[in-house]
Image 1 (cartoon, rainbow, N blue to C red):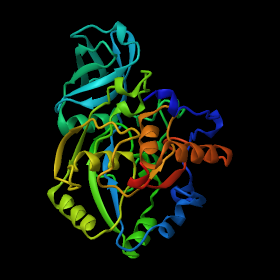
Image 2 (image 1 turned 90 degrees about the vertical axis):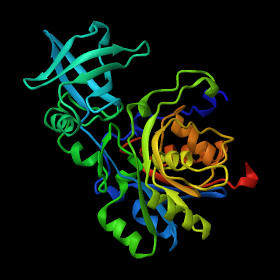
Image 3 (image 1 turned 135 degrees about the horizontal axis):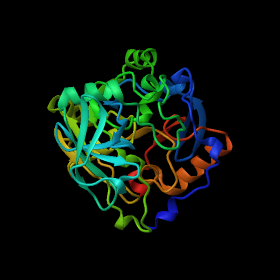
Image 4 (image 1 turned 30 degrees about the vertical axis):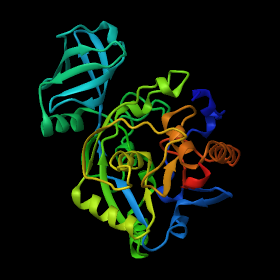
Length: 348
């Protein structure tokens, strides 16, 4: 399928540089097969029913952007993907200057050695600390790895440490936020739970690949990045029970949706999951488990816009996005959200 099918014109002033404050004051576009409704995040309970299951990604973003020195040269590194307890693939500005075995000094007791340079850009670094000690060093020296379209100075902004994290974040390991979840507040979660909506949590450690553009002309030639996900046996059991009872499964964010679909077999049964997924969802994909989707507004020609087009239909999503642009909705990580009703299987 041609990538340019998923292009659209987005004015620069529609890209959110700051989140809505408070979080649940953001706009919410209800996207149905037969129309659109303008709402706010606080209206979400009106779109839910007792018995629905909201599925959240409880990954926690680490301060993955760090600055150091190799000799007298300044180095900016952003962690992309964990390979083991001390080793990460990283995106490094001016990586051409680096050589294998070079040492990068981030502080007196926090350093890394260059192990490998990939032809497509990433550099593999082995840090002198591992596991929890590495995360502690990142919290001390790193800043939040905001996407490139959010403009920040070198030292970032202190408010992003809270703003770029869901209120239910639990398991450290992501280098990008599951941004749909940024809209939820604790009072909103309590209101939803009190009305009889079931909450389930899984973990997908969102990688830096989520920011990478699709550079090929045909989706068949795109290599999707891999991310590590976990669905526990208990969560899989409860999700299967809800599905058997005919209750709606509603992922919060494309990360939760991708992990659910990765763990579901051809018979529509979800299984425990603890591995990487590189699932790439484009129009024509048959969704096995999800019934509706809560998500943000995504980049033109991105894999995430392709996913929502697969979920609701290309024409439906293009009309919805044009409405959002005309109505001054805010796009991308700190932007507004939409609640998407899935296109029926008979219409696929």
